[in-house]
Amino acid sequence: MNLYRTAAVVTLFSAAEHCLGFLYRIILSRTIGPEGLGVYQAAYSVFAVFLTLSASGLPVTLSRVISRHRAHGNRPREHAAVTGGVLITLAFSVPAAVLLFLLRAPFSKVFADPRCADLFYILIAGLPCTCVYSVIRGSFWGNKRFFAYSFIELVEEMIRIGVGVVLLLTVTAGVYGANLAAVAVLISYLCSFAIALVWFFLTGGRLRSPRGELRPLLASSLPVTAMRTSSSLLSSLISVLFPLRMQAAGATSARAMREYGVVCGMVMPVMAIPCAFIGSIALVLVPELSENYYRGRQKEVRALTARALKASLLVSCALVPFYLVCGEDVGVLLYSNAASGQMLSACALLLLPMSLTMIASSLLNSIGCEKHTLAVFLAGSAAMLACTFLLPRFLGGGALLAGMACDNLITALLSLLLLQKKTGRLPLGGHLAKLFCALAPVTAAAYFLHRLLALYLSYLPALALTMLFLAAGEAAMLALLRLVDLKGLLGRFFAKKRKKIVQQS
Image (cartoon, rainbow, N blue to C red):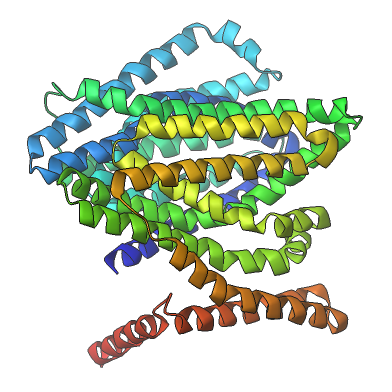
């Protein structure tokens, strides 16, 4: 239960951070307008490529390396690994930042709008600091300091919003506000770097000679960095390729961008909701799994792997009925767009391979399979590109969903086969069958209830009542089949409440 309790705390921090970010995006859109927001997003997307290249693979790799040293009780090597990570990221980020400033005039031509360049160079000034912060965050992860990891992330978001709001109050509106938003990002990066550095040293962190750690760190982090950089570039390629293929099939440019916007701007953010929960499970599990793996505890590794996969399936399967039954109304409620809701319902089952892909990739990276996950990612990406190239003529925006389905199915299957090879047989079939038996009748009953309510109520009350029925029905069926210990959870909750009341009295 410690895994789920810690994951719950991490998820709360993550949910708070994402909610604040969503509110800030609303503030930005209302103060700097869509044009300013476009300039901000374009500049930030280019900055994100350099951030990914400089540091994205180090946190997960450093976490695994620290777990290996912890397994052998080698504290000095932990400090050496952190120092090695800092030196590697500085070796990439500092020359990149200096070179970009020296070549500012030619590099600025990369941007279609010259205003993006000013904003980009505000952000790039903080590249070395935020890269070092990423490494320190990886050391927190490896040492299972999840509170520090999550708390500093939340503080960074709060500083970004607070400074951004104060700065934006100094201008009435307009694109110039995008520069102020970038200044807020830079200040938040500097603050999170300073807080993390102080926390690192106060909790026993040290810097020592990285001899013997640089090459292994670099070799392990490069495949992860390559995968994440490829993912960013793949998204950029699809954003260009899909409209071109739609236009080749006879669609107008406006319709092509509209189809792309519905799928990527409306459907996929809602489909990614389970990722917050699964990401929390992965964050908590990776150090423990790595430590057991390097101690040679095969039984514990298999048990932890099976527990993580089952928890991910539980989260995604519990959400599938909501998407199937209520997806169309959710699209109308969030976006006033029925097409997005229809797509949500149509691709509800995509949640299963998406969740398995995410958790399996994290598990494989935690046991040193970074090169394998890169190969698996490339196989799935090839399917995604093939669907994007061939299917727009027949499916329109559905070609992107078909590509995502093929991508995640291939990636999930290959990742599970590799996990089974590394850890032993994974008994997921019975668990999945139980989930189906628990949720299928609830889904069917909710579907007919929703159709009945829609005859007498407007869509919002009908949606609310259907979702309440689904939540209660799922809880009851999951508890009945012992997939969730509802009684135990409620017992611990009320025990804590009674204890608190006794202490106060």
